[in-house]
Image 1 (cartoon, rainbow, N blue to C red):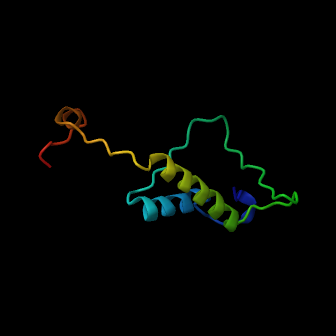
Image 2 (tube, rainbow, N blue to C red; image 1 turned 90 degrees about the horizontal axis):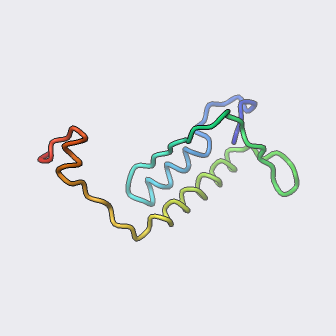
Length: 95
């Protein structure tokens, strides 16, 4: 979202996404980017057509995505791992 022309290092919209999920979801936020042909910064423009590659826009999009992810999983019961699943993962079922 911010692009390289901003001259800063940032977590982009993923930072606010993590923060919101961790604060409101009670767990650790994980973002997994899918395979794609090239990393191209989105052309982010406001209703007036002006560039909105700002930290406020990163926060807005990150919070929007986090809220939607939390909405989707609300009411879903966490899956418990069986001893077989733990053994396959190389974990001790006792600990």
